[in-house]
Length: 251
Ligand code: ADP
Ligand code: MG
Image (cartoon, rainbow, N blue to C red; front, side, top):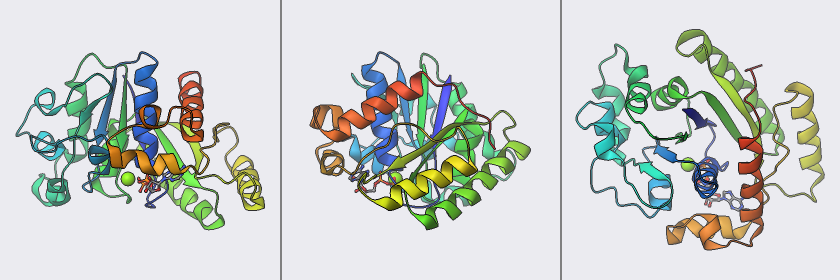
């Protein structure tokens, strides 16, 4: 199963928006998609209008609930939901093999073509679990100079994960989000990413679009909420690009 971890240690860069709409868009293209909310803030769970009243990812990782019982199903992508209970997980999981728990849980689920994991805004245990379970990392970022430094640190983390827990990890690519085409800064940052990480940048850029910020409030993805918006166009293009583009090696 192709498993994409959406990762960036910075918050507010569009991880949850990307995980949600990538999953929704590829589900509309006919793939069987599982979304995994690995952030204790449970933003993806809320954005999907899901009720986190039942079992969540923390119970699955603790071995208290089989993964298939925790998955919420429906016409679109299925969801392995999160709740704030995930926040206390680190101290409750025994040290041995805890980085493998998510990988094992996903391996126990069959029938999906693609899983997309929404990561928390840090490089802690849950992110490492996600990278262990992933076949590839997708890195959303904003076109800012300081974000380039964050990107370098993130690539170091990916290298460390490859060396330690997942030698097969690849990169889906780097995605510019909340992009403002008229700003010169955007072109400069794009040039630097291309120079430092050749071949990694997605051609698709996600422009700033208010519908993308509004849709979660209605528990909807962008294709349901505003099908003709720029946000729907951009995420539709990303789905097509990702589906047709093989993952790249970690630089
Ligand atoms: P992260 O998961 O990295 O913290 P989010 O996906 O939650 O980031 O995005 C942060 C905020 O920005 C949210 O309120 C979201 O709705 C909004 N947002 C994300 N992408 C866009 C975009 N392209 N245009 C406008 N608002 C966006
Ligand atoms: Mg988020």
